[in-house]
Image (cartoon, rainbow, N blue to C red; front, side):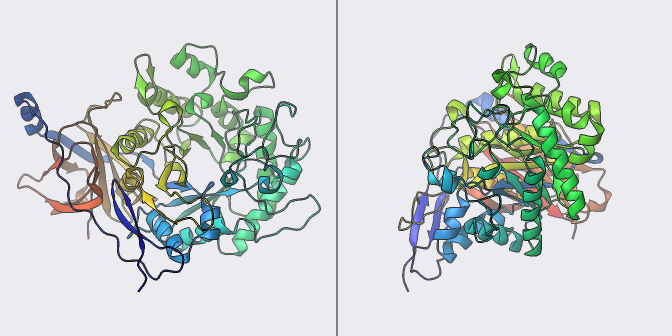
Length: 554
């Protein structure tokens, strides 16, 4: 039997098939590694010995969780086209399988604009170009395009992914003013041709109808991505839309969807950051500035902000977007003196949403680490803990009903992937490097399934500045599960004493399953936590780890 190429990383060893090899060996689980020797003071020992008393109360309920997900841009097309079936299945299992991976419950599929053919000079990286299903206004559809992405879309559905989302970075190049998949200084407020809102809507519903016919119906369609950004010379597909442009596109698509009979809902506006969502009043309360000035707001081409007001404050737009605001958590993953983005900014976001409708829903549809901390892969716990804290505050303060990572697989030296590869072109080694980002997201996605409801967890101080213990809890009545996720961002282990209240169905519960991601563990199941005589569950949350405690009443 031919031997599989072994791909090693800081977190483990995984069997990866090279072209022409047979079935891979089972993953090799690394032995527990001893940590570096540290000096522990008496004060630290006393602090660690005192258990934190935590109460989970099922009688106090918050938002229903819709999904946890990631996107296929832009790596899944070349992987799907050029990798072996064995290696593609390994990646699909890591992302989508609840048994072999992290069990994502949502998958975002990028409907390309055709820059693969038109933008080779202005988008240097071929992985950031995309094919289109139709390349001319009068031409026929070619459903063989984006074949690699289609392979992973089907793999997601086959492995039980609950929600499929189609999203668009740019209209097809034949609908753009400059004939490219990104704007330039000449196109004005948007690169979409004047009067092409309805043809764009028709194109998108045609794409949705095709995939519906293939048993891959999309639950959501996001026609616009980060409309705030100017996208000039962006080295990827993109497009800006001022608020009036944005409304015309959304309303045209809403009418077309109603006419088509498709069940897909519109997801919008997929804003670039939280600040751009806020009404000017709320933005002033946070920053002191008159209004948000980022992105295209400085071009003098209209307003590219206040998306909550523009979409939920207008009854027609509110109906079109289904009372839901989708946005990204970029540049909001830290808190500094006078700039509390993890805490105050998210509290203002929730307040702003409720001002229009107490039942308004919020989705986080993209996040990775950007800015000065973005460059350089990090397969370890530093980035994973940063992501975990971002997830935690998005869920507990913004009341997000969905949380989706940016790109599932990355080939670059940047903190943007859950899985990494060094593969660049056919013939290269098809290696797979998993990261702690992957497994940490799995602490949420694998156990908090669609339909779960966040419930109260008391006893922890919400520390937005790090070096503390964070926790959130969830109940899924249909699956009969209760789940709590803890983030220990400190250098010392934390003892917890956990009690369940308002959950009579779980009276007599004997044990909680314990799963940990840390420097030496990848979503590893350890010894169950047994109930004590007093009805509490006592356990230790290791230093710099994310732990999921979960159970089924059955």
